[in-house]
Image (cartoon, rainbow, N blue to C red; front, side, top):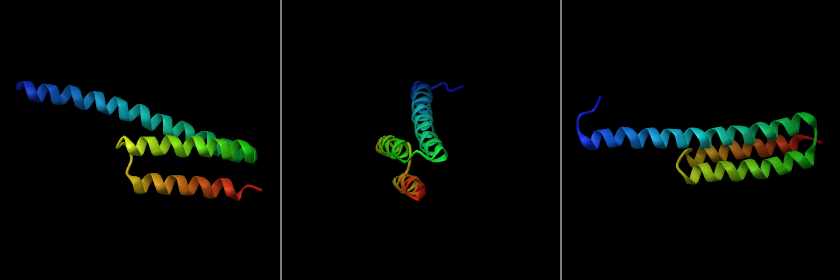
Length: 87
C-alpha cells in the first residue's frame, strides 16, 4: 500500500477511471451485440437503427479516451459491412 498522499490519491483516481472505462466498454459491447442480433434475425431496419446507436456509442467512448480512434473506425466499418450484407 502507498504511504505518500499523492500516491494514495493516484490509486483512488485510477480505480475510479477504471470503473468508468469498464462501464463504457460494457455499453459498447451491448450495442454491438444488438447489431449482430438484428443481423441474425434478418431484420434490416432494426439492424440499421442498432448500427446508428452502436456507432454513436463507440464514437462517444473514443472521445472519452476509452478506445483508440483507429479501433473505433475499424469496428464501425465492420459493423456497417455486416449490416449492408443482409438482403
